[in-house]
Image (cartoon, rainbow, N blue to C red; front, side, top):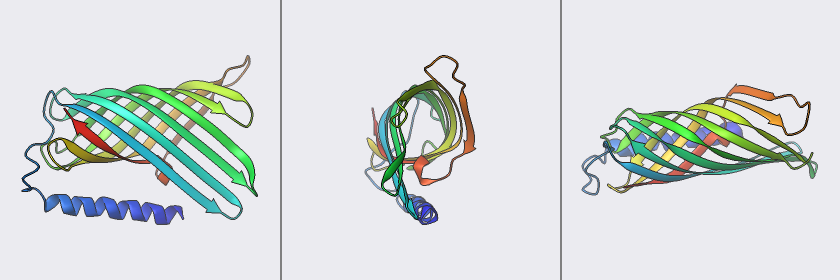
Length: 200
C-alpha cells in the first residue's frame, strides 16, 4: 500500500513538472519569487495504511510565514500539529500528538519560474503527548527536505514537500527519564505535505 501511495504522489509530481513546462506563457502568471516577497502558506498531511490486523493513521497541519531575503533564499517561522495512531485487532497500540514551533530556511533553484523546486532546512521545538501512557515529551527536531511551488497566478501557488532526512531528541517530563533520539531517512507518505501559498 505504501509503495502504491508513493507511486501515485511521484506520478502527480511528474505531471506537475510537465504541465509547468507547457504553461510558461499563461497570462495569469508574470513573475516568480523576488526579494521582499512574503509567503503565507498552509499545508496538510494525511495517510492511513493497513496490513494484516494493524491499521496506522496520521494527520498533520502546518502553517508557515516566510520572507524572501533575495529571490533564492526564504526564511520564516512555522507552527505544526501532528497526530499518529495505530491499532491492532481494534485495540489501540499507539497514540501520540505533537505540537511544533520553529524556524526554517528554503533555497529556491528556479525562483523566476512558474514551477520552482527548493531545498529546506528547519528546526523545531516539539511537545509530544503519549495518550496511551499519559506521558509528555519535550525536545527538538531538525529536518532537511525537498519541495516545490507551482504558481497558479501571481498571487497563489500550490506547494508540496517531503521531509527527507530528520533528527529528533525528546525527553519525558519526569525525573530520571532518558532522551529518545531518532535519526532517519523519511520517504513514506507520512512525510509528504500538500498545501497552498499566498504571496504578498
